[in-house]
Image 1 (cartoon, helix red, strand yellow):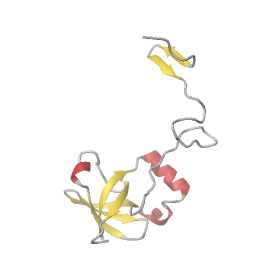
Image 2: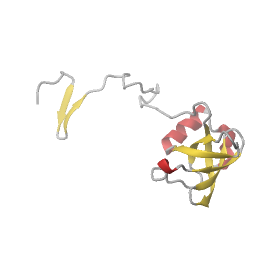
Image 3: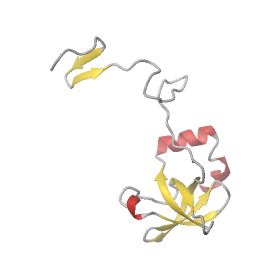
Length: 129
């Protein structure tokens, strides 16, 4: 199917292009392991929180990093993507009208939670999990 660059590798699974060290499409590398670390951080108006209790349906109580308890819901476009349980770390968007409510827009996986703890972002809600 045509000639490729000289840095291709062929094995039993097919052709793979060798990645250049340190140039992984904008990934941030840690010094010791060389593993790309990309964690979604809160943008303007977003807050990180921990699911404390489910109320049924798509509503749940979330303790956030700004020290507030919010009654949050999962919007319809995220319902099938987000399966949430207590002690899950999530990214919430507080409502503009009512600061005691919010929408859950992202769920962090275990490695991302580890990186958030390492950066010190989750220090204010350490007692919840």
